[in-house]
Image 1 (cartoon, rainbow, N blue to C red):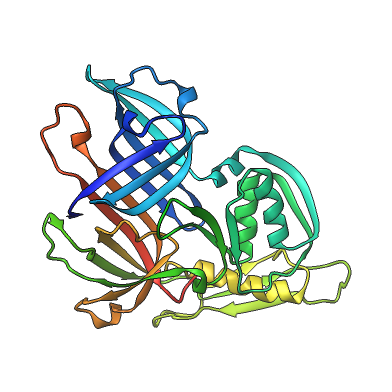
Image 2 (cartoon, rainbow, N blue to C red):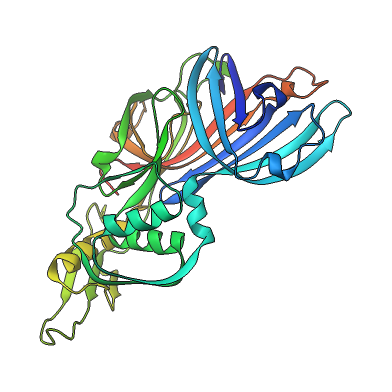
Length: 354
């Protein structure tokens, strides 16, 4: 299934847009993971080198006719030479967001009396990640003592964000290639695409976006979290907090997670960490595996399913991972005229979960 009038283009800093034609791409996105965009291009220039690509800004654009449906911006971190058919050289590019660079630095470091936003700001700015914004609905108090111990900056940040109930995704402007990293701790910070109709009877090419497959799954998971810690400043402090899971769907309540040490030194962090943990343990107890022709269904988006025969599924969902695949074989010299196709396979969870 695909949209009429589809085409894909790629711009790389320093190269003319006409020097590279997109043969195909795969975009892998998931909450709290830097995206990976794999792009195959064909070029009449056979002698492009690594210097022409590595660390260069690149923008993939998905068009329907003359209207851009989506932009994906990043930096090229890998290039591989492919085959040459005597007319064109094939190049395979891997494109990642600026956040990926944080994985190349490793450090031992102490942060004292700083909250998660201050720590994030320091490390992101040091790694050149300037386009980011926090969307916080919780207080996230300052930490008395926080240690980065032999971790990469990316591993350290993702660990802290997970402890604080924060997930991240890339926000894309509705029009234009503007893109930024969003740190979010509540589904209220996830934008809505509105209603998305369920239509399993689509042909190979349609003019409107829809969801062609929606497979719901429920599973048993941990039912509660208990966490405890100790501080030498107040030895008698119990430092014990618990949180029961919600939306159990009839499962037993005996599946307890006990976490010690809980990595907190005060009541505010203890209560919050227990809640964040049970939400994390149960985030995938209700999921939907879906397929669509819309390139806009990706992490950081919500939608309302309509028209499904099971009325309980006609509600709001949020996308947590997606694989967007596009093929444009006519970009190759001598192709047999196969059409451009776009497939989006994604996973969603109920929109009230994080």
